[in-house]
Image 1 (tube, rainbow, N blue to C red):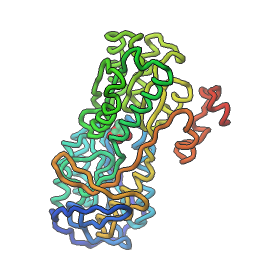
Image 2 (image 1 turned 60 degrees about the horizontal axis):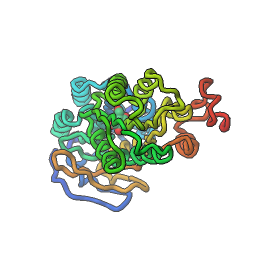
Image 3 (image 1 turned 180 degrees about the horizontal axis):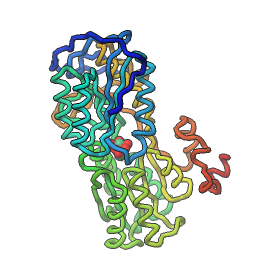
Image 4 (image 1 turned 90 degrees about the vertical axis):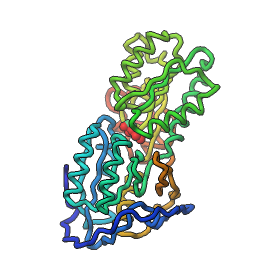
Length: 381
Ligand code: GAL
């Protein structure tokens, strides 16, 4: 665990409120929410004195968590609460490790936990343990079970729809929709988002394209996706595969490499989807190896998570700005006050208007020497 004071902390002598306040059904059309909607009774910490916030993230395989989620969250918390103390841990995909990390933070006296669960079902234990100590939990990006107090993520069914709509669009453009079938490589079965991505994608694919083979990929493993794609090439045959639905960019790397190793030239690659707007994903898009990715603006997600932590610790209303506050039903039937952001489809055409204009990556970061001959970089540099 990595603990850091955002500013030297003054001692916070604060009584922890009792857990288990009744869940009020609270929805506001836009912008703000009282913490009465939360599962754990709000605490009475103050921004003047500060309090202790722990952030637990799930893995190191997808670049986003260390590169963006963690620094954006820390920055946003520092802006909202300069006197707050911040602790951080990444579970590197290990369910038990995440429980140990959460326990260590609770022992250390965190006042709010922000939890990006490795496994949403297993996370229920952490959520319940924290709440029994009066520590509210913000479910971050993945909806932990057990009745989290607030939840911020993207509209994850929409993510799957956006991926599938883009793939269908590419097949239509190439005129190959009826010529064969697609391979679907979904995310980790223990991640509830993966189920939403898959459901959203299936809605769009239904009746529009045949699914030749479909896999779920434990731990979102690019290596596993690579083996699955090799298997699909062997059993379906290269000529049959007109497109590949990959649930994220990390797996798209494994998929493209399986296709290339099977002898497919860059020009002949079928369209492959992705998610996370990873730098390598964007670079594969400009070099023609990947068709699209889904850009999820992580800064607002991290900022909202910090605002939720502050709201739960202080009992002040959640300030969600222009974002609608809604509710999401978790696997236990609990309604969790939520903000769900909109995912954006990125293809070569709108890289400039999305990830570049948002400052997610600069042209220099994208157009390294290996990519300076691409049309995108020739135009941009
Ligand atoms: C999901 C998350 C994605 C991606 C994926 C792989 O839960 O929403 O952005 O990171 O996990 O870790």
